[in-house]
Length: 403
Length: 145
Image (cartoon, rainbow over all chains, first blue to last red; front, side, top):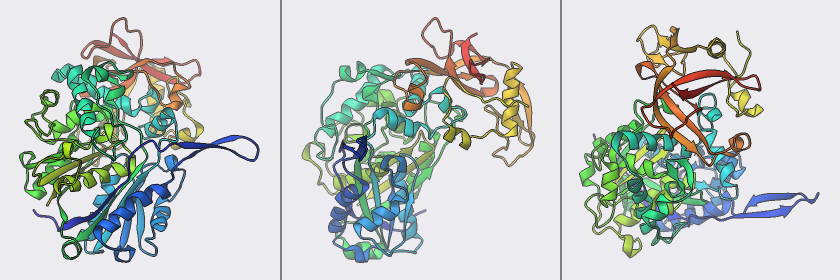
């Protein structure tokens, strides 16, 4: 069941990081806080390199899809209109998409559908988020209100808490250990250290992770990903245009997607995320590939436990064995499994919500064409998988990408 | 029918409250709590049970019947929250423990854990208990059985 041929022909990626805030006094002498970079600067940083990489100008772009997860972070309503205008895609259709932390990959999926349907030939997917000018507690609040107010939020369940519920259950049922959890961020930081686009380039040890401050036990600080500013862009085209404009198109051969229940208590189990499996199976089926064919993977590691569940749900290892697989270096380049998040993942590279899913695809492109920093280059990689999750499985996109 | 809100120590902001305005069916759930009962719904077409109650069934059924759930069960999973979102941190002292209780037929409910004398442990016997708060709201807690 092959899908219409759509390719990535241009990539752009800002550095992810804490771009900071500025505090200014207003006319009454009250102090106001503003983001130091806005959607405007961030969009520029990823869009123009992508356009240049594709070797085209705005004239060839027929439509744009903009991923911004939370307008409250940016303080800008109708952000698509701003971003499209800012980068100069004017007089062409644009739209904002939002699926929480999977917003970026949903922008790609929407652009893909516009091309696959035959409506447009060349479309830009741009993901942008500015987050770090807010306090971590307020940012967590903004994300927490995406849970069910009536049945979850009033009990103080934030996103770290949702994932801690999975971790405690998986420890009891599958025998997941503290050390196995810690092996995930140790690996992410190991590779993120080499990634010039990463936010937190620092190697850590198992003890650093296992003894870091508690956030929502059993999860500790190093189990949790970063809050980031950043942007990423891909330019996408149909087969004819892709071959015309690029000598190195990256083909999307699988574009799986699914969802899961809104409330955590409605899930059939809390040791895996069934939405991950459904999206993964769809992408594998479309591409005719299985986990064995994947040379390099990018999975949504918003929390260490999320990465471990993704290993299992996407078939990198058996269900219940994700912790062991991780501790046995299954996700290392020189390990026995599938190199995973060798860009540093959300943990070390960062997680600017709307950009994250696009940033995964940008790095996958660079991996497959052999242009990442040497210590994190997977040799002879031909096929990549990206996996991007919104909330805790309410939105899932899995892509298979091939040279 | 009850005019009360449901909540824990956390008061919802007026903005959020407005978005979550109570339906007549939901008031019935709270009225149940006032009588010390946990009410769930069951689809008359496919027989599926829902806790928290749903008022339409994904199977297409619109005829859902109320029934009372046995409040005793086991601890399905737990968390101890040390870092709370802003809106909650202003109202609750951290750390606070919370859990998910598994009731009959795999029905599950999330709530704060109270009265534990040991560390929470998956599988321990617990029950869910309704309680009126000082602010007059109705809430429920998971406590050792």
